[in-house]
Amino acid sequence: MGFWIVLILAVIQGLTEFFPVSSSGHLVLAEALLGAHARLALPDSILFEAAVHVGTLGAVVTIYRKRLVRIFGALILWTRAGFRRKESFDDDLSYAGWIVVGSIPAGVVGLLFRDVILRAFNSPSLAAFLLVLTGIFLLFGKGKSSDSGFTWSAVLLIGLAQAVAIFPGCSRSGWTITTALLLGIGFSRAAEFSFLLSVPAIIGAFLVEFQLSGESLTKDLIVILFVGGIIAFVSGFVALKLLLRILKHGNFYRFSYYLIPAGILFMACFYYL
Image (cartoon, rainbow, N blue to C red; front, side):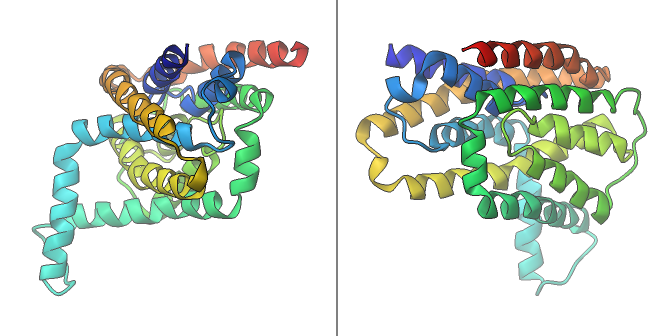
C-alpha cells in the first residue's frame, strides 16, 4: 500500500508541477484523501512535497540545460574578468541577475512565514479555495500576446508572484507566467524564466526542510523521498514537454476551466468530511 501511495503522489506531482494547476495543492488534497502522512509515517513537514519538487526540477534542468550551461558559463567568465561585464556574455549574466532578484521574495517569505506555510499545507480546504483563486487569476492572461523584454521591475513582480505561489493551491507556473504575460512578456520567454526561476526556490526549500527534519529522517523515509523524486522526474519531463507545446497556441488560461470547478468541488468535499 505504501509504495502505491508514493507512486500516486509522485505522478500527481510530476503531471501537475508545470501545468498551472498547483502541484502542491493537488498533493495536499491527495494526501488528505489517501491519509498519506499516517500511512507513510511522514513527518509533520513539507519534506515529501519538497523532495518530489526536486524530482520535477530535474526535468527543468534536462530541458533547459543549454541555457543553464550558458548562465553558469557567464558567471565563471565574469569572475575571471575581475567582475567586469563584457558583451560576449552580458546577456546571460543579466539573466543570472534576474534569477537572483526574482528569487528574493520567495526566499524571504519562505523563511519568515514557514509556520504559516506549514499550517497551509495541512489545510486541504484552503488549498481547494486557492485553486479557485488561481483559476480566476489565469483568466486575466487571456489574449495577452505581446513579446516585450524583461526589466528589473518586471522580474521583481514575477518574483513576488512566485512568493504567493508558495501556498498550496496557488500554481507557481500559473502565477509567474500569467504575471509575465500581464507585463507584456511573451509565452516562450515567460515560461523559460518561470521554470528557471524555480531552480533556487526548490533547492532552497528542500535543503531547509531536510535539515529541519533531523531525527525524523529514517532509512525508510529516505527511500520514500528518493523513489518519489525519481517518479516525479519522469512524469514531470513528459508534462513539461506537453506544456511547452500548449503554450505555443496561447491556451494557458484555459486551465482555469478545470481549476475553478475542481476547487469548488474539493471545498464542498472537505466541508462535509
